[in-house]
Image 1: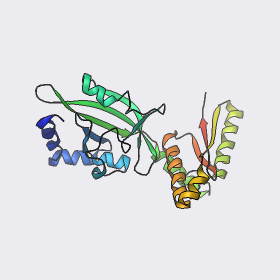
Image 2: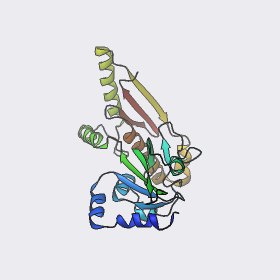
Image 3: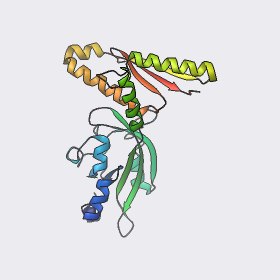
Image 4: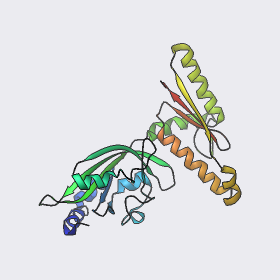
Length: 241
């Protein structure tokens, strides 16, 4: 950790005006010291991840709690650590990532790392400013309309089989009329029966919820994600080329 300079910067986060601004913005802010441990966790960061500062402060940014995953599915905290690279060369870095929510699902975020410097130019920490990339507001409104038509699975909150079949009919009609291509992904959860047998159906339901929330937060508003039945899921991708 880099002495008192970072502590001075962190003290500024407690000022009345700064605290008000940080409380108001939707973006999350995490400040990391030169040991790659979290020293500040803003209210926006808590809103996006569901994690209070008490669960995050003092942890390494590479811990499982804060693990970042790239759009290609690879972890960002291994051999290509963005934070360590910024500490070494002082260059800002931007990336589209996913961060683990407290309840297990992945939230897509846009992250920008900025070096924090002391008066003499030395890097004393990093600010990670990140914003939610999911279109959850649009999706929530759309799901409310589907729920009124009994097209939503009550456990997971995503489309049920009837809802997916309705969406598939719409995609087929678009293809027949306009030639708009679409994609279908069908998958299930490996070993799900063992989870239910070993840990009980309550844990199994939590697994289903985690998977469904990850799907709903990471598809576009024009796509459709649903539970086909049991541990089976379907995603329809509009305008897939």
